[in-house]
Length: 163
Image 1: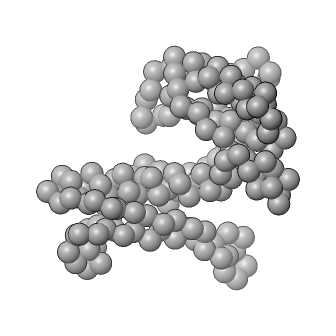
Image 2 (image 1 turned 180 degrees about the horizontal axis):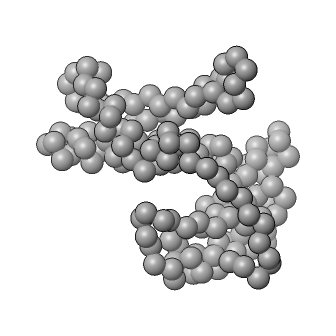
């Protein structure tokens, strides 16, 4: 992307930040907005924060950000690590280096999609592999709960004056 294009991306992202940061944050009902920027590059905004998604060069994109599938994996990993960090910290443990590696598992049999696998590493927490309460705590966040519950994705096409 050219310098002029990069400046246009920043201007668009700043404009979207101001639009969405004006709304009141409700953790039970978060709102995000995604817009086509150019080509296969999209910009998403929530609570005044913006990020780009894109496709790899091999898929016709500019590789300016993660794909939407990668963002889904990041959201799950962030949910798992954040929730588990809170659980461990509340119990007096120091989860320094807490890490989740999240990936799509290959689809098995006739299934269209396979599982999402999350491998969690908790350095310095003795016997972590033997503690089932850690698995329960790691899966207690809102993102993982929604996915496990099979939240419906309802898509509506609305008029161009809607926000």
